Amino acid sequence: MPLRCIAHLDMDAFYASVELLRYPELRGKPVVIGGRRRGAETTAIPTLRGYSGRGVITTATYEARALGVHSGMGLMKAARLAPDALLLPADFDEYRRYSRLFKEAVRAVAPQIEDRGIDEIYIDLTDLVMSTAAEGAPDPWARARVVAVDIQRTVREATGLTCSIGVTPNKLLSKIASDLDKPGGLTVLTEADIPTCIWPLPVRKINGIGPKAAARLDALGIRTIGELAQADPALLVGEFGRSHGAWMHEAAHGRDARPVVTYSEPKSISRETTFEDDLHPVRDREQLSRIFTDLCVKVAGDLQRKGYVGKTIGLKLRYDNFKTVTRDRTLDEATADAGVIRRAAGECLKRVPLDRRIRLLGVRIGALSKPGARAP
DNA sequence: TCTGGGGTCCTAGGACCC
DNA sequence: TCTGGGGTCCTAGGACCC
Image 1 (tube, rainbow, N blue to C red):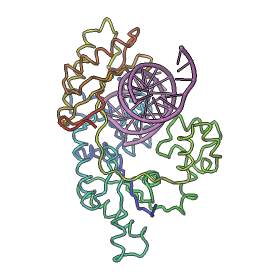
Image 2 (image 1 turned 135 degrees about the vertical axis):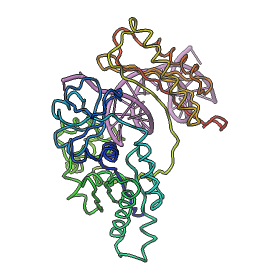
Image 3 (image 1 turned 180 degrees about the horizontal axis):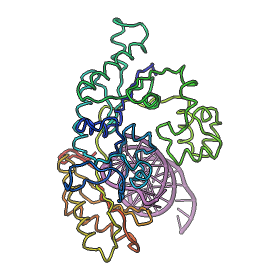
Image 4 (image 1 turned 180 degrees about the vertical axis):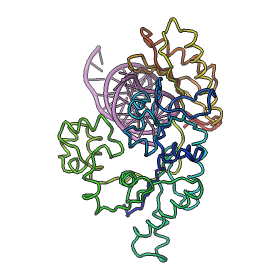
């Protein structure tokens, strides 16, 4: 494959930064985003002190992170570590609005964008960097740096927000690179930088190596990406299987041929909710049934709004011990009807043991297609 | 300290068909 | 009656990501 020039752009503490545009007086203070929307009983922004509930942190400002809290952490635990940090509920409509704004701004500079969620994108800069070869610096990576700085400025002008960018020959390395100098950083790496900049990092920095795989690697004495790169591929294949093991070896050497995918169809749509208190399948039957129907209505609404129908209806249930089970059922014909979804999901519910309290209930629909279009 | 909500992809067994 | 291999769909669970 000819050399490519791929950027990964990651918005800095995105949700929290959007909130700081709204509450500039909070700038410089520890703030966490998370939990449910409260009633309008007070206008003062509460601290974490005395928080009780099941919420987790979705984003923390850098000042809050300095106190030891991070996204994914339960708010109860965060309250013990940083009782004076301020707590704001998430406002996803607003974050989606800013997400569209920053993506449009980038697209105006560099159109080859892959959406990776609300706050990050990959950008294929290859054509841009090659087409400007005649003008600017002779080194393509120096030209890529100029383009990336331009993108950061454009994002800031369009949103008032900062982002960090990594630019390398592929998505895997760019994802790592964008995280090396946050916030507001720009890191350009080439293959020659892999031993010095990538190999000292922990294996968890590789996108796709999560807590489970990292623990198993640790048990093999492999902690850094460099150690993973030097490991015998046969050992990795033996531990993780042919496909996963071979991928780890390639990743550790910084090799990744995945293209930047500028368009993809959704595969599934789902809604789920964790109850404030665990519900009893018999005693709380009516409340459960109401919530269940409501989830189906929301899924149907999402389908209709987005213009899809689906064939496979799924149920998800999490017990009070956090064990999660799923059931699904494929219909003969695709649907976007709340009643049809409710009946299919109800059948799924009958196939699940209801012998303990329930923490979470979810409804999913997959095998999506566009009505009117031929089946995929 | 018990751990949200929205997704994707992979694996693996069984059914069913050729 | 027994022996096969391949392909696809369905289902359940799990890892991982933002």
